[in-house]
Image (spheres, rainbow, N blue to C red):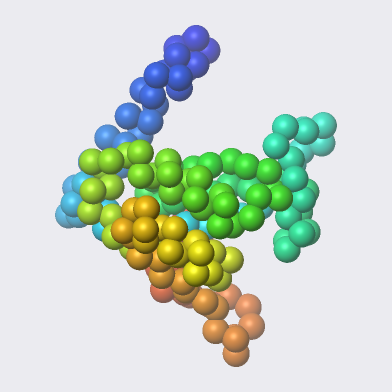
Length: 163
């Protein structure tokens, strides 16, 4: 059985199955197969003991482990995921995961807007995305006056997926 899994992972069969299923769910929800908006987030995950591959330290979140760069559509359906060391900064990881999203070509032909949190804010990153892909990056910031949980425009979708 593992041989099938490994071969399908290597030849892209699992990604094709995933992409086709996502498209069917989008159509079932009366959406186009290709999303027009995507959302990125990158939580850091503490590593288990004795794991050393791609482990880093996220100083902002004080976590030693990995970081998952996740892109979802506005239904919360996963487009692509990238696992890195926790020390990889948001903009560098976002560039890598957006390259994976862009390789989906026809599946993201309508994509025009990427929603992100404040960790991705910055002119060089936004200009890179706009220049390379012609996508607009929209930053959603948490209101300063609120403490605790706040429902943020578009960002709640990826938080639900991560949850």
